[in-house]
Image (cartoon, rainbow, N blue to C red; front, side):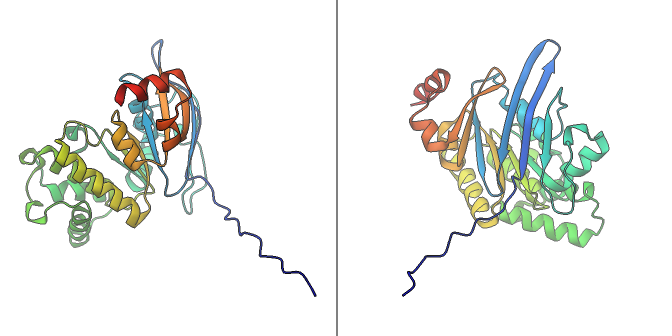
Length: 267
């Protein structure tokens, strides 16, 4: 009798969505980001932590192609598009790629929104940049993105200047996901919000990630936010990644002295 041999596991041949190698950013002689490399897989949530001035927000802006690089390689695996070093694109190519494939939520809503335009108009503006010209389509998609971000639709014609900080963040989030980008970048998305509003924003992000499997990179000084959202975490100091690993591993048993100091200071 032939012995039973269980089927071998099926391995999925999947590529990282994002691959950065040796990214570097200088401001004169000051090194803001120094030799940073990382890979991010589809559907993964990466947290980046570090003290002010550690380079985490600069790195996020580099990934959004709004901050130039002084070296390194940045590639996104996108359907129907050959991989190339995105740092080498010209500003028009960067703008087009950013409009269609990368969404961002800034800590300061004034950086991401036209504060005196309607909330739905802010979302529609992203669609216009990506080439959409049909008003009915823009209105429908803007409304859908606002609803997905838990924004009250009876306020969709209100300008962000009239809204609370939490509501402004929801408009930013709706604008960021309107075209269902492959990559969502969040720079301190809950800073300055009341604790109850922070919880609502985090719940919205968790739901969106669960429903849409959006790949996210979250920068935050709040380790509670990172613990709740992130699968893996990178710890940055003086522009360099000094430790990285699974979130539970790094936050409960950090190995690098700076990571230990950072985690214990937040306990």
